[in-house]
Amino acid sequence: MGVTEKVTQAISHAPMIALLGNPNCGKTALFNRLTGSRQKVANYAGVTIERKEGHFMSPAGHPYRVLDLPGAYSLTAHTPDEAITRDVVGGLRANDGSPDVVVCVVNATNLRLNLRLVLEIQRLGLPMILCLNMVDVAKKRGIEVDAEKLARELGMTVVETVAVQSGGEKALLRALDEMWPVVPVKPQPLAAIDAVSVEDTQREVRRILSVVAKNVHNTDDRSEKIDNVVLHPVAGPIILAVLMFLIFQAVFTWAAVPMDMISGGVEHIGALLSEHMADGVLRSLLVEGIIGGVGSVLVFLPQILILFFFILILEDCGYLPRAAFLLDRLMGGVGLSGRAFIPLLSSFACAIPGVMAARTIQNPRDRLVTIMIAPLMTCSARLPVYALVIAAFIPEREVWGAVSLQGLILFCLYFAGIVSAMGVAWFMKRSAGSKVKQALMMELPSYHWPNLHNLAIGLWERAKIFLMRVGTVILTLMVLLWALSSFPGAPAGATHPPIYYSIAGMLGRALEVIFAPIGFGWEICIALVPGMAAREVAVGALGTVYALSQKGDDLATSLTPVLASSWSLATALSLLAWYVFAPQCLSTLSVVRRETGHARYAFYMAGYMFALAYAASFITYHTARALGA
Image 1: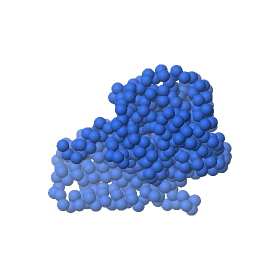
Image 2: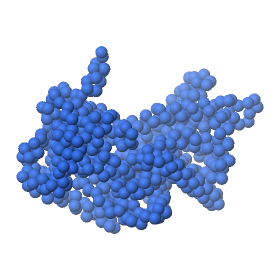
Image 3: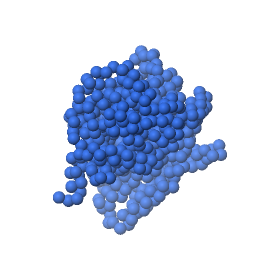
Image 4: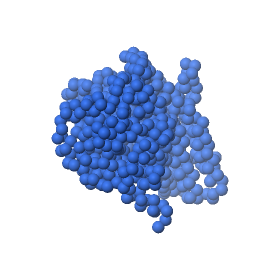
């Protein structure tokens, strides 16, 4: 047996540690600190809730597996996230089993809220370790927590951790090694949790705090001072709008150099292959199919990472819940609460996590409306399409002295998605006869500097997901599209490029009858079909289609100049309008069906988005033509 096989076998038989705690307690930061890049993300069986599992080796050489459970305030579940946490800890999920050790992470600055969950889990009788996290922040505020007294009161091991600092997890690792070997214990029935009333539990929390802690009511003066500005009814929305505007400016300006480097590299590889390979099917596949298709998508990786860089920073520093608070009044106008902001913001990355994040909304009708409008947020898969068309038709110059015109157009497209989502939400809520606004109740964590370690892991995960899509889904679709675009060949005496006579060309011309009124030619129609699998594939499809449409010296692996010479401005604007509302990719529709439990909602979503996209493109195209575009 090889070394790798031995390590894999040891990990598979290692004790399972379950990390759980309230939201914003630093649980995920501790998970990242323990596992680093040795983690994988999947879904729990039967649901679309994210399951993060990793592994690590302790200083004593003992292997452990660790499961990062969804945040919960109580095991009396009110949301699907909390239900998963309850079922895993209670050993009710056959595929996961019960954990061997429960590591309960609590925020040392907010023990009054965190200890209720600790006492509930303790009633299940599982081996437990309490991580008193953020002790550095507590000390700065003058909050004193005696860990030894807390351990005696709770009857369990208590360790102090600072998850955002290197080495901040060492006390936990020592405590785990002291428990070795871990003896599995079957948890008590979940009914044991309800054996003690909530009032008695809170009374016990207050008693424990009176014994082990001092100055627990001290607040974070710094956070309060910042909130006086960022949550101001006038200054707050302005700050939020400026932040969003600057982010979209950075997406274009910062990404220019790395995009040029990737684009140059792709073109150089394509030129080398064309120069050193004989003309034939294999060269056509590599240059026009793979390089022309996949390379056209890969070039947008810097822009996607820059967008996620800012989103992760805003999330890590504690600003996102404030943004939800600021937008509560606006969302209240369309019948939603500010709690919908987090799922909608997640949809800027991808509609799938946005749809899944709606699980935290307790009101079923609000949850459904949020799911239905989440795909209208401009996901990162739209960004390559936007960036390509903007670069081809919008000049690279500054307006008002310092603002990138291309970044301004991108901001307007994102803003159009937000406005349309609010409009659809208003219509759905009114058509359903609901005029009741749900009160917003959420915890506002203290501000803190973003952790570079967590930021790096988050960006790496996003880059890995994107590159895996490029190397699997997108590559497969590009090869398939190349085959459909190359066969059968052009007949003798053909006057059009060979792709015109191919299977893809025939399909594109058939669809052109439907899309001609909005300015889409058969080339665009071909690209829309694989774009149903993943929106960014449309860019690669255009790269393949136009590469195969060129001949000799006209062949270009860079799409920008090709589109600028092939499309009218009216067609370009129509395509941008189409992608503001473009029907969802099939994977998102599948998740919608699973989250709602009914296929009709997926069909309803696809139908209304197609209708909006077609109407917006029709109006945009004919208005632009009337104005001379």
